[in-house]
Image (cartoon, rainbow, N blue to C red; front, top):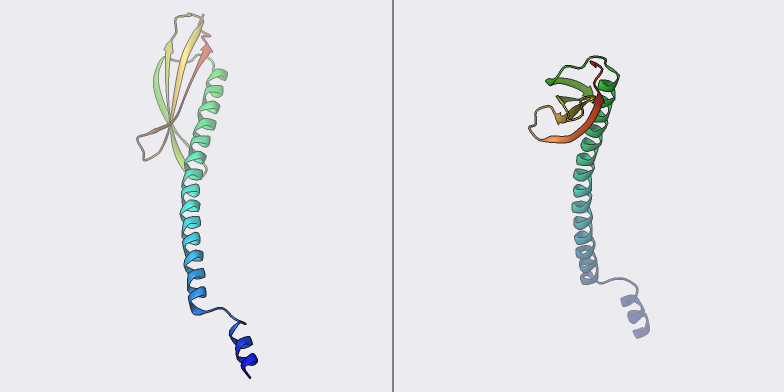
Length: 127
């Protein structure tokens, strides 16, 4: 009879052991959730910068193909990835008379912060 009672007590976990395991599990789950939220936020920021880089590079290449660029500042809105992006270009003369200096700023519409700035030189075809 005594042998049967001691076997019954050793078969399961105590309430205290289960509560400690739940505390450890919940602490780890909270840490993982916090880390995953940070990663998601950073992923969105990296994605925005990547699209801004693509847009600036594409715009510089489009300008290289256009004949007769005019000096000064212009801007246009481009729709990409279900968002509107503001492209600001500034074309100026460079120290080399054969080249024009082009700066392109990419801004997500509704924000003030420039996500990407690209600079390049384009042959001046007005020679």
